Length: 457
Image (cartoon, rainbow, N blue to C red):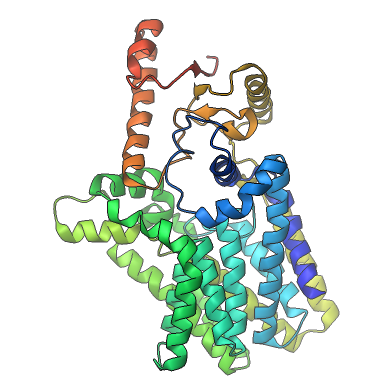
């Protein structure tokens, strides 16, 4: 029952703060649909690139052939948040031995998420592969605490398969939390992780061998700097997380020390350690010729701040729930949880409108996309304006290039950057007064574009 209440709270938060399509849903679900139907948006540069989240595409792709993408998004949200909500409930119950504590911790976690994050990481929102991975990791942690180590290992492997970065860091934290002993049981667990991780790890690992310094620099500093370059993190967010760490450590003095709680503490501290090491090795700008800088650049690609972005608010929320469980009556705790959840839903949220367009412009954009869906040939490749939002979701046509949709293989990353630069130079030439027809005819030598969509004024 508590797990269903937690799931419901997450679904309400997801629906109100991240209406479909949420920020990454066009990215993931369009890829899944194209994976099963290559004729859909044929010629789209991003959709025809590598498939690093292969398992997610295999799981959701069949649904995209039977239902509209918006329906698939909600099916994915319900199932993904059910996995996460029940796993989170099991984890909190094992730590605090009180069923209602999970609901209080959920409200606290959602409130923390509503106020912001450190490196752009979030859990409850739209459906994508990391939602499933976090749900599997929650169940893995719950089983590890209950000493069901083989099941925990298999679930961790599945998390890696669904999202290699999130699941991989989960494995690293588990090893750091309990590095010894290395015995027969640990080797069996390692084998289970390996076998369950293979379906998703193989396509992801295939991308590591073809990296170049140019591609890595583009990916880290041009496309993903808000996630990977700590100097770009918001100073208030950094201060908030440091204060949150101190508050959590102080709050632990008021909790009951158990082997389960000690293991959980080591996991969270391991996430903090990974983030600190990530900060220490991070570069502020693309590397020069030094080989050590190239290695640091590669390490930055692995999102070292991802897990601390999630686990520190989670740990603080669980600690608060534990303190309230010991010192407050159930009615007071439930009122507190309801107040935190209500505040989380009421706070301003940029994720409510990931398009960044005002209401009138967004309505015009959707109308234009629907017109394109009705009138353009299905094999059209459209040059869309900067800031294009969910074009493939609404118009169901291929795009020449869009900033959000960057491939993850080295060749694709470099080509993505080249196309962005071609579009930028073309627009600049027209703004400088060069003949639009002649400029357009010579601006894109690959000749893939069939139509151009641009804003007035």
